[in-house]
Image (cartoon, rainbow, N blue to C red; front, side, top):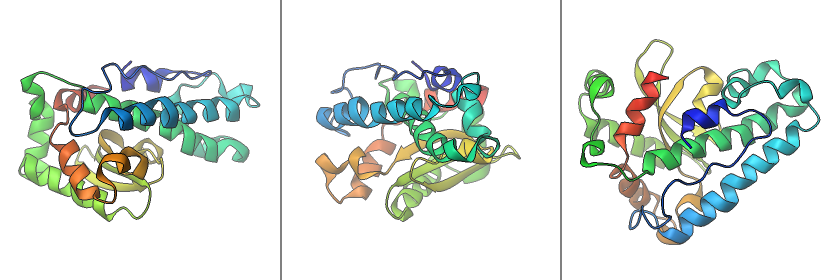
Length: 213
């Protein structure tokens, strides 16, 4: 299931299949980390989101993307759950897709995304360096994001916890999970090594597809 399908989900939300063997990302990420991350952590966000929305049937008509973009409109009692658990569901769906094994052509950006990176970062390596810097600068748990802003520029953001760029009306293009559960079994405290490994295997075809949303 793609991130597009997940953002279109309505209550009750469903954990998407990983879509490839948990060993497929090794050595960048080991199979045990992938399995625990997907089957336990991502699954917990889906379960918690459904539980939080059980008592708010008026919100069941809205897709996940709508819930995230409209967070400030919803009852105060459920806003934090949507932000944290809805964000966790959407963010992880993108993350699995960005790591998906792809063809040789997916190893570098192409098309519109390539042009935008050249305009806003000069080179792909400069873009990756900015993403790595944001990931290293994130204090505690969070994500490093490449986003398309409301003015159609590319920018890098560091966001805490499971906050999604959609909360601020920005389109996520690449998201790097820097919660410790994403890398600690293999890398321990070496977050920089983890970021290098993940950035080296981003499926840029998936990232490029985000611009067509």
